[in-house]
Image (cartoon, rainbow, N blue to C red; front, top):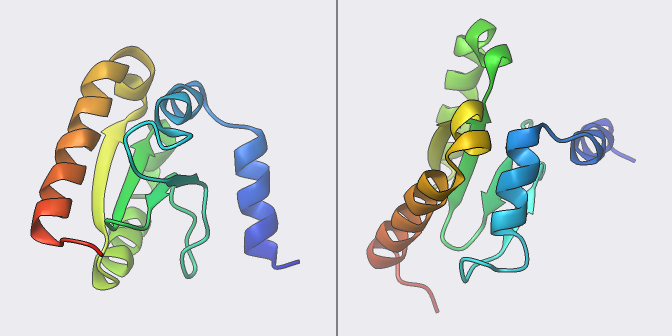
Length: 118
């Protein structure tokens, strides 16, 4: 198996509290679209990916303070492939879940209006 796929599997098996809470709100097409958790996209593993419309939700915890350049590189890569990247803090995902879900819903509506699908 691809080492990146193995790493993604490991991330899925050990989510942060914020990731686990947000996943419960996104899974099973709860917002009307399908999200994937820790899905490999090129050389990166975004936290949550919706392929239609192309939305990536990244949860930024304390580790991201030390990898700003890497996060910029990841975001540029994803945007070059047509994804809109929505960044939320781990604290917000854990303690302000309704606000985060509202931001995701707004992003989905904007993307669907801008890029009507089949």
